[in-house]
Image (cartoon, rainbow, N blue to C red; front, side, top):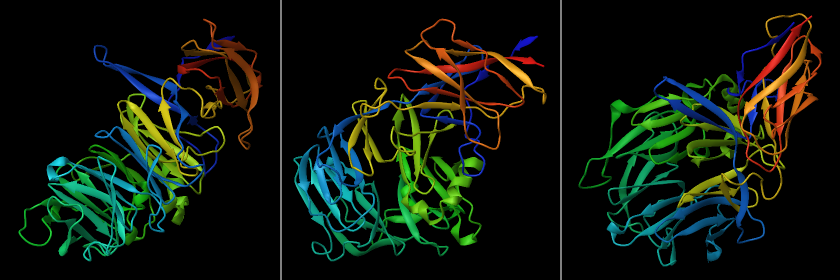
Length: 473
């Protein structure tokens, strides 16, 4: 006699063994949590991620190094190789021979003139609202801090920049181009190199390889205005500045404690001063540790996608992209139509539109919830379940399988893997998503089975659960 089992939700974090692709995976989706306060419960939908639409390509192909939308001018500023653009207009094509990500910070008009500052780790490039760009280095000011780390912070009229020697320098008050030799405070009280600084509320976090330190504006009459809050120091380091991404007062990064030599890595969430939350999982941590020194080549970004804040972590060595939903607390994976990674180096938004920059080509895309293809090419949503025996180790038959979800175009391919030693999935059925009854039958016999559901059509896709019909033999 066949048994229709309780619906199984399409929800869960990656459960890959080792560094492979077996076990539970949800690829190219975002999870959406809908609360029902009256019933004290919630529904989680598994929804296809937005697609990429070509937006700006000032040059044919060049390394993408960062983008920023400045609401004051209504323009998107981007770095391609050694050139800076405002939309498609070249502001400069003679940056220093630097490499890696570039960082942005807006300076308000209260300092005298609104400016956008771009740092490439060697020099600063100050852009006015009228598009005038000025390169700032030691040739302009002998006290300009060389070998800066990239990430900057603006606080109370000062521009702060960290340097590889552990110092956090500040500009003169209400200036982003004038510096004084003794205006700095040293982080790194525990012998770990400074990796990045990050503004959190009214404080500045100094992230070293061994510790995280906090500083506030103490109004000191000479030297740095900052003072360290010693009791807030956290015994955790930053694995790579490239893993740091933030939006407003929320930030994520890959942490480790290099000084203690335990080699462990995890992803941490910062939402309030001196409080960190480990949002990782053993599977994610395994991938992070396996990156080894390649963690310095990861790329990350944080922005709102489909109305919720997400953190995207692209790992070079693993060639995988893991995406964390800040509100849902769930991880998924993203891929584009041609590679295993969703390899964007930077993201920005303006007037409700989200823009992403590809690290390999520099191309800037819009990421719109009403677009369901990547640059005109279909991409696959893959929902992969863990292996299940459905209550019996004996052989059984799967007489039918239904999907609970929204009606949409085309079909969902239903695949199965009955051999735990392989990653090969064989198609056993197909479900018409235009039908009211989203069901397929005669899926064959098995002892234990993992399922995979594939959707590749140019359309929206949102599902809640799947429901198998099992007959024990």
